[in-house]
Image (cartoon, one colour):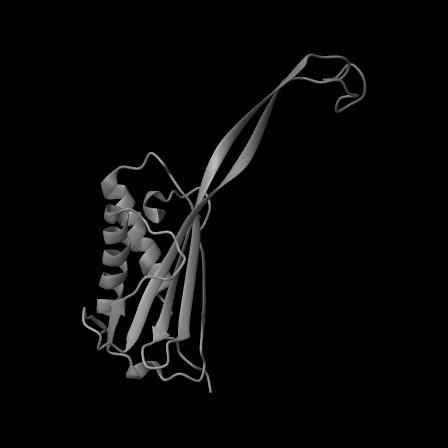
Amino acid sequence: FLAGTSSALPPDVRYNFAREVDFTQFKTYRWVPIKGEATLNDLQEQQVRGSVDNELAKKGLKRVDGDSSDLLIGYQAAVNTEKQFTSFDTGWGYGPGWYGPGWYGGGGMSTTTGTTSTIYIGQLALDMYAAGTKSLVFRTTDSKTLDTRAKPDKQQKNLDKAAAKMLKDFPPKVKK
């Protein structure tokens, strides 16, 4: 879903965390579904998980498939649409001009044309829960304009960038 992100708008990455949690205790994680959330297709799911797995491995966390993990990780993905209206004005309109009538002033011909387009906005939220208490300890979200025509290599590259930005501040540094 975030795979085809474009550079039209800057990404909007945010995060929050439980300040009382010692994040150095987390060494392993496993993926869990978030109840009630729609899932991506198998290919997109592999891409999202693969990008996040790579980033978490850089941070020293190891993915496990069994029930014994320190963190439970789930994601939520959505695509919303917005309408964009663009107008373009051609020609000279009526006005007094720079130096009064007669100098680029007076009557004129002007045409305004407008177009509408649909913009796709992808959102990805990554939730991390302490396995023992099943309480949310870290949440990061990203939203960005999607390029629906991006090729698969570009999609994967953009998804990798999104995962890196989302996990840039994980584990969080608690200021004392």
